[in-house]
Length: 120
Image (tube, rainbow, N blue to C red; front, side, top):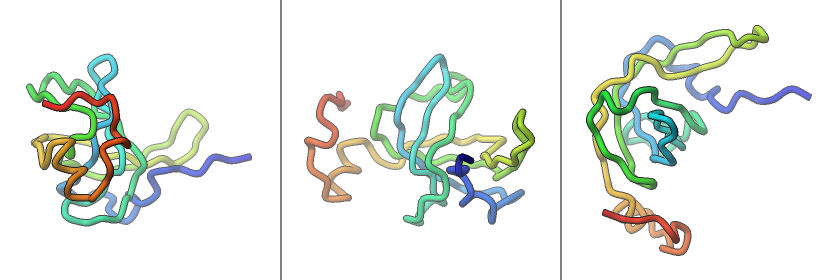
């Protein structure tokens, strides 16, 4: 059974330098995991997740649920099995769009969904 690439939405933006946004999920070993990646200002999710390496270089502090924006170029590569994958490379200019709690209020979501998240 083959796995579907969860970043296929990035395909139509290949080689384009864009402003993206995503929701902070976690920080693991200096890498930031973002979920629900879209073009800034658009609601269509193009990638389920991406990892941003060496987030300490950006001198930013984000919390789970924060919505952030960043510049980057959609790229493709072949994995070790020869399968074409999509990613966002040359990421820079990370910035906060809205805090976790603000994002919930804007989307009309109930606080229980994010129970246990510490807010600023």
